[in-house]
Image 1 (cartoon, helix red, strand yellow):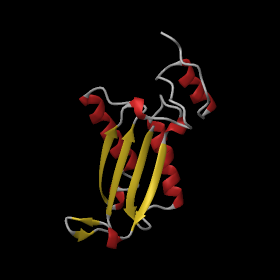
Image 2 (cartoon, one colour; image 1 turned 30 degrees about the horizontal axis):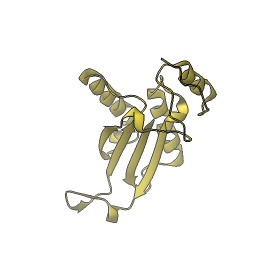
Image 3 (cartoon, helix red, strand yellow; image 1 turned 180 degrees about the horizontal axis):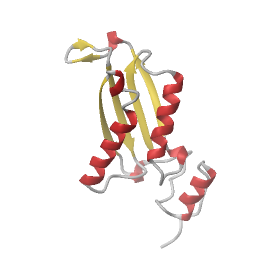
Image 4 (cartoon, one colour; image 1 turned 45 degrees about the vertical axis):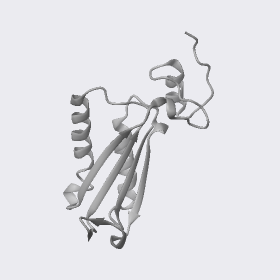
Length: 143
């Protein structure tokens, strides 16, 4: 589960922009079932968004929660952040908006979908979830 939360000025993104951004973000996670990827857009009035103690009507804050996978090394982290910058540039930086993001990584063991513990990565059950694009009961293979 990556969940992306965009806190942004009112009117910064059209409905079409939001859909395009969500689709682009989903493509980053090729190894995951698509339904794992969530994107939320939260408009914040300039009277409720302050940067350095000053009202901000040109700032986008992105908070990403990663649970389904974690980054294994610094090189992968750097490539991910660079790819995100390119992916979002047409919607944020190229429009003159300032932005910041961070990624939290939550342990896989503290996650459920529809009350089910997700299958381990690259297992037949996860492949089935990917093909069906939804969470369904499965049997855990015994060791």
